[in-house]
Image (cartoon, rainbow, N blue to C red):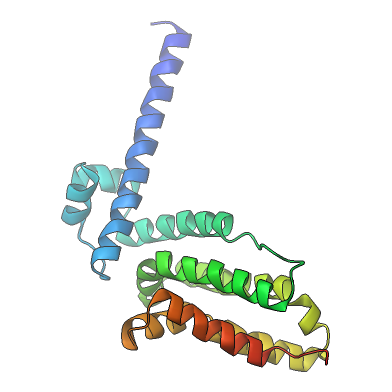
Length: 200
């Protein structure tokens, strides 16, 4: 076999391995959406259509799989949550921000529940980075309103807003209070509008 042929074979193996890796991550996410508990390796293998051995060839343990899935979700979430309507009026910006945030919470809440429950330093770092990204997005969306406030007050408001639109808040509205996605978004829109300062 020539060097070129050997390289093609190796590339093919890498692509198949990566497809299997992504299939395992997708299986993990799907099982979490059905039941918000850490799936077993056997359940993952069945859902992904691979062997248990294939899972542990790619991930040292299920916590390593959780970390890889967190990185996957963060990358996807950042791509999906690009700030929109930055120059819109106040109500347009609030609606746009809430729609984007609600979509992220609805999609990634099952994974979030697992991540915050695992005592892994690297996962805690991912959780904190996700929370900080949420704050940075609000600084962009509400930069006009925030500019009306002195720094200590502005920082306090951002903390309050971040808590308001957290995954935990969405979980309570959707699953403790039984609100629809639209009703939950309406709660957020109304609360944000009341909390943001006005130039009047």
